[in-house]
Length: 172
Image (cartoon, rainbow, N blue to C red):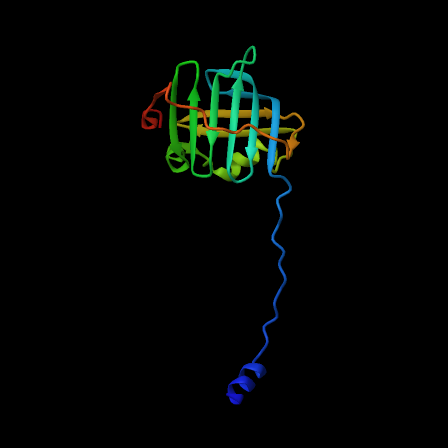
């Protein structure tokens, strides 16, 4: 037994590197009254949007083009995206893999979370993204307003029972 203790005690010592995990700088983020513009070859839509994010959990984008009435709501989690068209009473649910079959460059949770918390590498004043969806070029520009961090946000899933589910494969 002494021999084992001597062998273990005399063995090479590994140097342990102390790594402190990176602590997120915020838990919730709220951006109200940002201005979003979507431009395609045939259309241009500008609207006010509100983005509410709970880090690494859920985010909601609320599109309110006129009189504060929510027209479109996008709810996203790290695994899927739900789009609710309140004007036409329908919704669709897709995973990122399903969305990316028709979208170039690809979209993922990290990009969406950065977009909704004004943490894109381009800065926190304006975001400009360009995607190709089914051979149609779509440009998204968001003019950010100051964000509020670690404030209460109202991220709850919209009840979908009053909307008609649309098969996402029809659009993709």
